[in-house]
Length: 73
Image 1 (cartoon, rainbow, N blue to C red):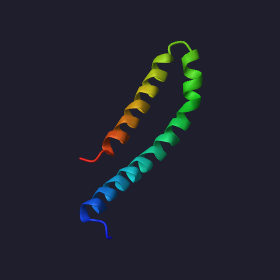
Image 2: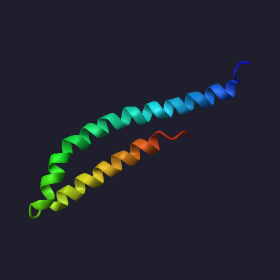
Image 3: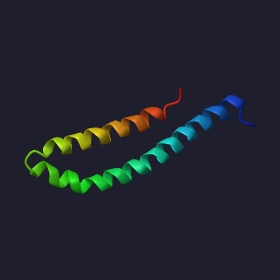
C-alpha cells in the first residue's frame, strides 16, 4: 500500500526539523568548544566572572534559538 500524501508531508517536516537542528547544532558545538578555555579560566580571575556569565548566557540563547527555530509552524 502506498503512503498517503499527508503521511509523506508529515514525514518530510520531521526530517526537515532534524536537519535544521543538526545544521544549527554543529556550529554551536564549535563555538562552545572554543569558549571552554575562557569558561574554565575567567571565573577564577577577579572582575571577570561577569564575562563568563555573559558567555554562558549567550550560548544558552543560541541553543534556545536553534531549537525554537526548528519547530514546525
